[in-house]
Amino acid sequence: MKRFIFLVLFCLIVCVCPVVAQQSRELTSPDGHLTFSFSLLKDSVLCYSISYQKKPIVTSSALGLGDWEKGFVLSGVSVSKHDSVWKPVYGERSLIRDHYEEMTISLLKGKSETQKMQLQIRAYNEGIAFRYFFPEHPQGGMDVSIQKELTDFTMPEGTKAWFTNRAQAKYSLLPLSGWTDECERPLVLQLPGGLYTCLTEAGMVDYSRTKFSLNPKKTNTISCSMYDRVDLFTPFATPWRVVMVAERPGQLLENNDLILNLNPPCEMADTSWIQPGKVMREVSLSMKGARELVDFAVKRNLQYIHFDAGWYGYEDKVGSNATKVNVDPRRNPNSDLNLQEAIRYANEKGIGVFLYVNQRALYKQLDEILPLFKKWGVRGMKFGFVEVGSHRWTTWLHDAVKKCAKYNLMVDIHDEYRPTGFSRTYPNLVTQEGVYGNEEMPDATHNTTLPFTRFIAGAADYTICYYQRPEIKAGLPASRYLKTTSGHQLALSVVYYSPLQFMYWYDKPSDSKDEPELEFLDKIPTVWDDTRVLDGEIAQYVTIARRKGEEWFVGTITNNEARELKISFSFLPQGKKFEASIYADDPLVNTRTKVAIKRITVDASTVLDTRLLASGGQAIWIRPLTK
View 1 (cartoon, rainbow, N blue to C red):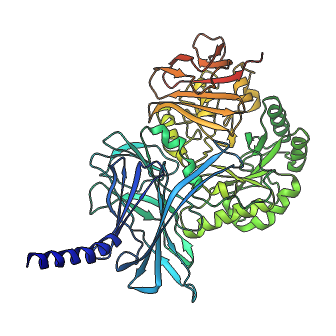
View 2 (tube, rainbow, N blue to C red):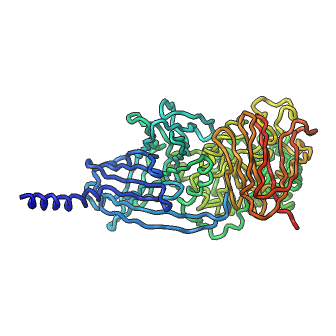
View 3 (cartoon, rainbow, N blue to C red):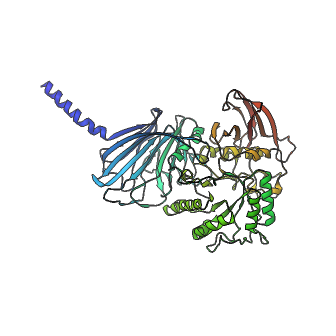
């Protein structure tokens, strides 16, 4: 009898275990630290969790989309591996590794072969990414309407979020409760155990933008909040949902190539005309101003000048016409601007020209102005006041960038647009705003928050200033004065990444008195072979080192408080000597900008004692010593 009972129990275990095993799956990162766990629960709903070295990052959380939330049957699981290295056209690094374990979970809704959805998951050492994919049925595709995403992120008790409700807004450190609005992405979270997590999206090109909101029914839970519905034909995939994990906040920035890896490779056959560089805007909209700026650009090693809003009239009117020069009288009532002559003069001196165009004119005239601008010799465009968020305008905007590529025009998108990696596929999108930058003159604490939050998403056009100090430029409105030191602004050109880096934003050539420290801005490039976050804490301070060839540039900024730091030069190659030119705030220096220059010999063993003024900063240029 006992033997019979044992055999029955054994048969039950053998029969039941495969069924149970079918309902859950795990995927682990190549280094074994991160694990994504998937489960199909008894009521046919989907859930997942994420752990790092067995510590919970995201606890049991929902998966699904609108009508695709329950009634699933698991129909198949496949796994694969990928490990490659690719070279971007430009970037924060010259080589990028794309290394992950991948799992595809196929699900049938109501056991119908025509109602199939796949959950695609990639486990990187840097984070977990997953998305929903709707394949085309062999008998033909179907329409899918997605009105809501049900993906949740339930975080450990005590998690805090670096919250901002808009792309161009300040940050606050908040608990996962009491939010009065949605949160912009990327969203950086501080976990109680000392880890850092970043929630964001990648590959958001033909879709609706997703922000984050608190789930009103489940504590410590962040939900996805779509801007509007999406109607598409199969096959198609949603954007990637990304959960990055790091032991220190600077690792999130160091690992942000993960977002590029989740986008398709470059689709452009020829990218030789895409040339990043430094740019300064021309605001007088006059021939005198244009020539002076071109000459200043040559002198100060800037690669581009930019004609800002007003060159073609009232930009905010439906009838504005970006095919003709018609200077807005509010900008210059007596303008003599001959734009084509100004472009000819700039190009003759080796300086390229960007033109600003508001979305009103872009929407109405894009197909007309692109060949015209190419004929004029324009190198790029700044898109102004773009519509963002909706499926319609998101798709339109990325299609506009593709059209610009056909005419060899680079693009800088301003206002609320934040990147999700599209510059890998179309690198003529060289930068974008989506940041609370120097147009608003934020304080130093805000500036020390940005490297660990906004810049994880990619390049940001922060618009660096220099001469906007009360002691240098008296008589300006309070909103136009810098709240940081000159050393701080110098350092921002290293700390903040933008392949098209706007310099001297509110300045004009006559503001400059050829201060000695301008040699740093003359020398600094805008794209890099390597990037290291040497030290830093969110909203406190940061030190970032970037390499171009054999030269290194190091930027350090502090928040509104004075600070003493030690900067290790261990990132330098062993056995070589370098000259370090150090540009630091010094109230005793006899210049308007109060920046001292010191040159010392350094190597990999050097540790530099650094004292920063409140709201201050320090920049370093490091060159190999020639024998």
